Image (tube, rainbow, N blue to C red; front, side, top):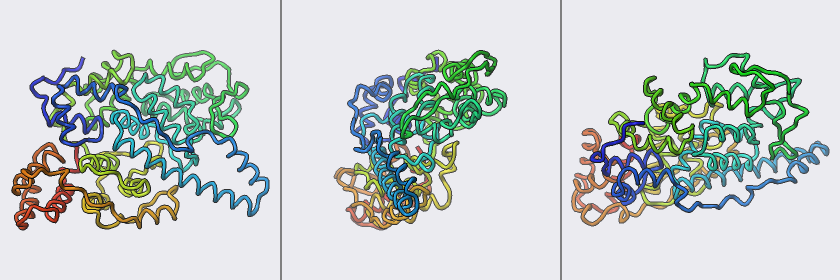
Length: 488
């Protein structure tokens, strides 16, 4: 068992830390509510999210389209100009749907009642990094996203089984092309290297044997449904990680999970995501032992982690660089404002380096200090002005699947309307500069600014005789540009 945080240490700042890491932050009133509950009940509020109603909405097009393959097949047969026009139209449809999908997911993060569920979906998206650039089907990307939502807190083996037969993944890592005479090793390799064990914990023989075991996993008509094709499966004897037999997918996953490294690998990555990067070997062993005692179920393990003293240690609190998604969603929640349009919101996080549904490679995003390039820091400052003041436009953002027309349209979008200062400051908090600073620290940081940042904001406020919108809004924007605000 992990050592539990002492009851007397649970307060407003610790509740804010929990909400920041197990969700996307919130208003002072939300933090106060969690603080008043006590540690165990606050953690339960987030972990047992089924207690809160789910937003069951989904994009209208998020369903199989059996006519899609027929349209594409007919255009290929026609060839020439018909084929070119059909491909252009299909690409346009997919671009528009991806814009809607990104906005749909960001909205769930910003205003949904299950923040930890969406945070877990974001983790799994980076872990099983799959890109629409290759999949080229918005429905399949939505379907994988929803798969992560359904399996977010369940058993590790169940999630691996589901991902291994997910259509988007089958396309992304070429598993749908694997057959007995030509086993494709891409998914078998990444299953061990990136998803479950890490480098150095398997052999090339294990890769080839796993690839043989996974043959027969394929896609059905229209490439939108998993299909088992026994005629393509290699039913011969195989030896994988020391286990021999006519192995298939279930046996491969089961053999992976009995390796001690399997629990170490995933818990180290989850700890890096929720708490602190580069945990020690001793701490990884502790986390892995706890995970095994939870029968490799994520919900009870996360409950123990979020209640642990280690999760609230000084070296963990406010030491994590906000990802672009975390920055945007935390900001709109703290500012008590709505998200920008789907097109603008998707463009904003892409600009900062996190293009949802299009990670840079099979490893996903590096995270941490990799988010803080010189250009990205400037763009973070521009985003603060855009969200707080409603001023300026965001500079161009790339993205191979963004589409030039959509990208240009997003870059021309004006900022949203300014935030309402009445939601951020009470009359008493506007009494003087020190009260304004204290209110901003409580709302946006849940901690004290450094002396350098505090001096900059005090100097700004001292030059303004009146605490009105013309003073307060630029002060908020300035606060959101401090180094401290880039961390949670």
